[in-house]
Image (cartoon, rainbow, N blue to C red; front, top):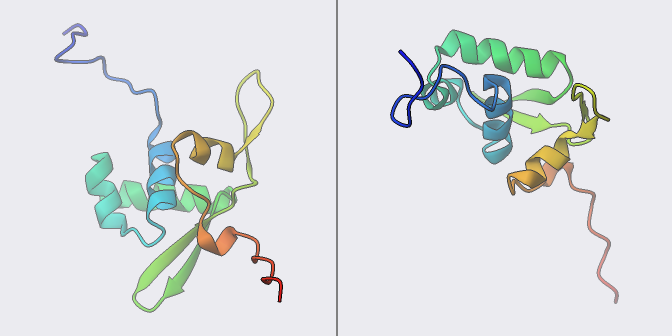
Length: 112
């Protein structure tokens, strides 16, 4: 079957890894189950993607009670074929996803 407006070709502009990274940036406490459902993959595949992102240093995972909290390393470079690497934050800025609060530098004290 060919590609039409109703039935696009079997490819996407964004990888599942990138979509997962954007979802984590938007919701640092996202559940793997919810991520998998939104991407249209199995929970096992979503867990594998998060593990890849953690092992590559793009995401850190910390246990908070019964949930995980993910923190993105905004300075970690993304390698682009034939281009200079760009920091993850540049990608998040492109999608208007603000820097996570835990990554922000402490605010300077207000003048007295």
